[in-house]
Image 1 (cartoon, one colour):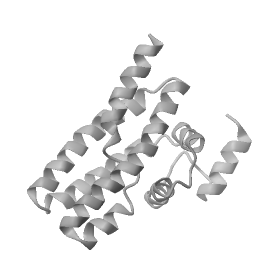
Image 2 (cartoon, helix red, strand yellow):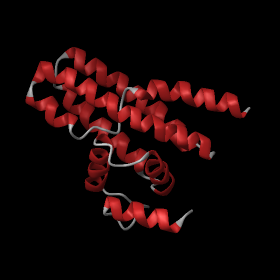
Image 3 (tube, rainbow, N blue to C red):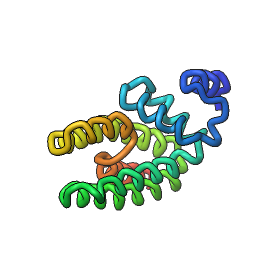
Image 4 (tube, rainbow, N blue to C red):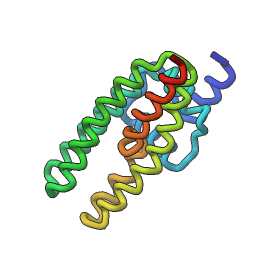
Length: 160
């Protein structure tokens, strides 16, 4: 890996050890992605260098799901779908072996960031401030997972 790019990413994130990202650092990364402060190339590099990023995302989704369980039924159903999609995304991320697949996953993370904010803004219309605050920290999740599955299948077929 390019040491210069790695060091630049560490500086930008304010993280010295990308091999073990903390929950606080993960929250900051999510915010940076949602604000488009990380490039696609930087996200790809992050996926390559941060082995626990998928686990942190899974924990985050589980936390949000727990909160949503106290919300109304339609929101709970939405988060059950998100949970199943996250399980699929986790499998895809762990099995990504080629740079092309990692690039596709990074593209999906960017799309996900945009789509999650839209989803949570819609939920916000039902629950006012609660969902608005939640939307600020959820850039890294949800809707593009379905697109991710399609993209992964496309990349896999293209490689076969």
